[in-house]
Image (cartoon, rainbow, N blue to C red; front, side, top):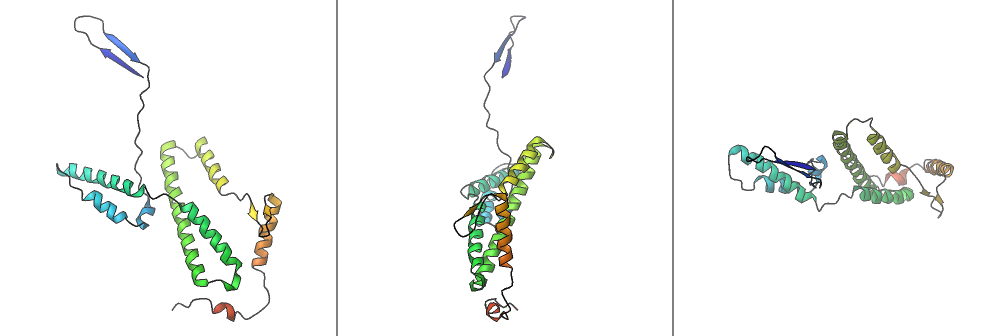
Length: 209
């Protein structure tokens, strides 16, 4: 809504116009640099492209414009890179479960590589949400507000185990069934199956000096 006062020099009375139509403004999002970007391919070229773009004017204007150009170049570079960390984590987790089921027959070199890749994906995802939470904190205020209680509850729901496949075609959804299946799974996983010396296992472990 907007009120305009039109001054008239030929009269003691001014015309006031009251506009009731709300103006739609596209508010520009604040630019936040994700530290996880430094590990991605192409970021160096994007920064160089934005910073070295030709700019005319005073020295202060050049610096300001180069920072702006670099920001725009980073946004253009990152736009086609869809964040797919969650999908990567799911795929790698399934792959590790398959390899874990192979027990001693697994490829230990591949196991280590997949585990390292999964750890990196988890760290990048954690960093993303830490920066996201910081931005939301600055925007929405104190952590004790209703917004942050709802936000925390949403994150907890995402981390909740709702169902598990027992491996026999049966899906556990009941809380007690989930507990029993998890206990049985890890009890069988870490159970000693007799002393075999471990020579056949050690030969699959790579030696590093």
